[in-house]
Image (tube, rainbow, N blue to C red; front, side, top):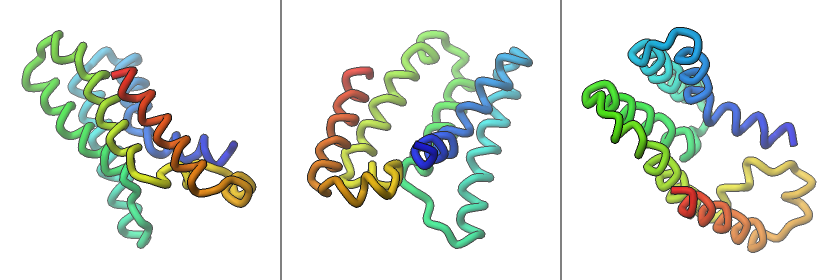
Length: 133
């Protein structure tokens, strides 16, 4: 359980930071800038440590950069309202990669569940993301 929560926290740290900063300051520009900085810092630190940057982290970085910039440039409430659907669909696409769930599972689960079962469960999660989108 700790493994999954830690991975999820790290994957979505920039979004969490955005929400905290925005709720405290009510400043969209500041919150977006800090979220972008956090996401870039995460990828940079992983690269400097020689660690593999997971696809979900690349996705988060891309979404933060693209959607953050689009939000700031457009300042259109319709775009802001459709962003959750875009995010859910993008996450669903990344979850279509077989075996993506492995890094979120504790070792005991990886040892006792077949790769096929884990892949099917991952596809189910991807389906849920598409439904939510």
